[in-house]
Length: 309
Image 1 (cartoon, rainbow, N blue to C red):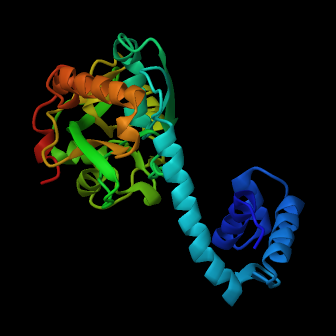
Image 2: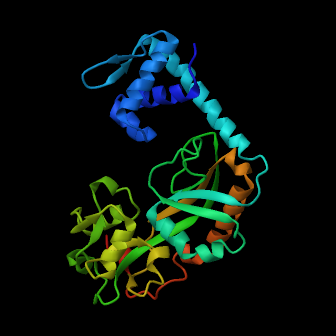
Image 3: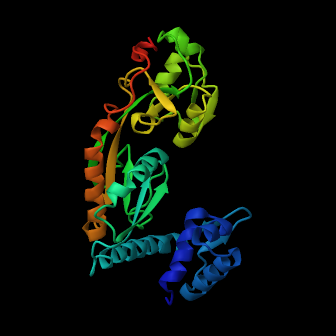
């Protein structure tokens, strides 16, 4: 067999997507390039690797055999990349951090103090709810509310984020009774994001009715509340201290999200990654009261925790 790793990259992309167009998008190349490289690989190995069906490319028996070897080569190449990155590494260079948009906004707000001792490190802040592939260096560090069951990951709990109900600064509410809150306009997440913290609590308040305005992004939700569109459950680290928002009631009991710092065990050895990890741990420790909703706005109402009862 006379095939190089580049050919196998094309093969793996097509095997995983089943479509040349999707493989091309994944690799950042043209559709004809994919089909040409696959044909060249088939010529090199002397076997047909895909059946060309009307709607997709399907692996042949030979293709399935090659797939196992190609995946092993891919894992080896990724490991080499991670290990070689450590050679001569110093606390300088670029570190890519992936988190949801709420945590990214929190980090951006405190980036000057985060970078105080990291002037030679460049930061890439990526908003995502998905689990980036740390093995392939799609991100160096992740902050997530759940920890995947992967032996290759090292985890560190950063803190527990409290949530509360917020209204626009100019919105007036005269009572904390559940029926008063129920009559208010609410903003929340769409049906695909009802797993977000506080959405179940809100649905109980609304008698399982959906919120009037639905979004798929925390920062959009914050903007709606700022403009007085309606009430919403927000993380206290976003709501407290915002002059255009005011908290309605106390921190919601049983509505919280643990924040975990995730790193691949190989990447953790990089000096620049370790430096950013240490800085993030210090930041979350120093802002613990903010994250737990103990340093924020004066409560406009008391008893919101009982509103759903």
